[in-house]
Image (cartoon, rainbow over all chains, first blue to last red; front, top):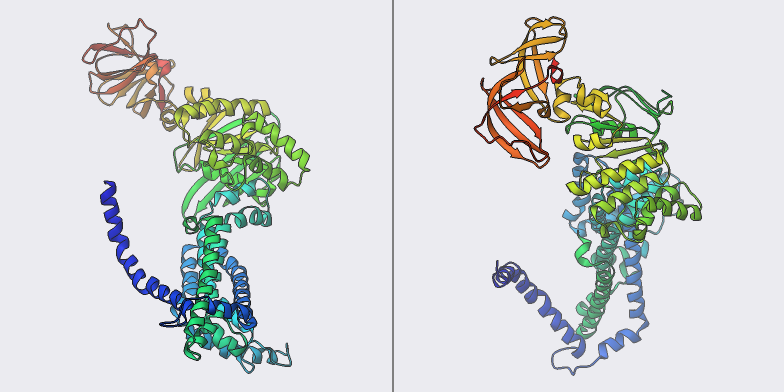
Length: 280
Length: 358
């Protein structure tokens, strides 16, 4: 195949998706960028909106909280997902299929439904608190909602599949002969894990962390419902500015900050590990 | 002989109803190089996995230095193993790979460095200590795998087709190196291959396996000269196989009528000589071609169908008058006549070169 016809074929294959992306993603994004500088149609260009963001301790707090929650959710997801992914590489094909359904099931359920379900479970008079009280583990209900704890619990559940899937892929890619070789050389199960399995699955860990963290940064519904007015995240600020305060300039600037934060994480990941290898 | 290092007694392994290893007994002695040779699916790799402990026998007993190891996990068996595709750790350097078993044993780092240097020197890989497996050629990876399996001086070395992934020339080179390394270190080795040439080159003793059974074990010469079955005869080297009926025994020689009219005299005393169906084999290099009929038995006229010049020998396909086709190998040292296809010839053989299987 000549280089030219190869390019034409590539163009035909990638073109439609690229056009769609340009129309529905990059164009509005460009408009937002302009808005963040002008504040509205006819406004003079300037960094006024960004200045207001940076100078207000409220917005800086929001940014820090958003990052902190995302980091926390990422850590909890990794710790919770790793054993599941590991077990999936150890069991037979039928069990893998069953486990996979359980992993994917939440993805097919509306995030709103799932978040309301968590509210039922976590509220002061909710299922979890009642059970704990009934078991006499606690006297007073635990505060599991309208704080960061609730937000982290809810987001972890929503984002868990995005951690399990890449971890499973990278664990499954480890040549099963390697642990055997280690074993015959005298390595017990624990040493086999931390000297082989763990380091060889690091690309999967990094991919899982990236997927969870980046999605966590932009989360809206779960923090809004489980965190309420006490746990404001960046996405909630943007929503308030647009819907309640009609301050498109500030909302656009906040959106740009979120986009930049995400871009830094993704580019950093690419530099460190290579995005092209993350899925291999 | 002394107490065997490894003893297998009536070991069987079944997967469901399939029998992978059937009632196998085997002794391997200190310092010996024993090869399990057989076609794929003959149970040789399973046998190795049973000794390593990656599989548990369905029945039978495995002992190392007299102590039963059936209940020991692989990491407690003090065995070294070279895997078919080396199984080097991709995230560790050559040094890290070879040091792994020593670090697992918590040896002090100075001793680790010393021993790794020694063994890398022995396999001529010292220069590559800092390289990673992906930066090495197949032969180099193989050497590292051997070094890694030997560095902790295990009592037994298992090798599962370690040269299978190499090309022919490199394979022959590595065979020589493995053999001399094994001689120098005196490490007891159990080797698995389906390559009969490799088995003959390397082994003190060869165990021939077929369909889960150990068919015969012996030195390469014993197996080649005195195969227990026609399977062994055919698997180790090449043979011409003929079917016939035992006719009459005179002294140590039995006359056997081959199905299509030929008669073979073979050194064999058959218990119920007359009328018994037998299978006869003879190796191509034990047949000869002459231009004139010789006196005595085992001289049959034929016609050359094909002559292939292979350098040190010429390989003929000869059609005997009765329609039977045999292969004949004649050495070539520069002055032998090479018979062209179509040439009328006589094929001769000595009675003691025929093997008769009941």
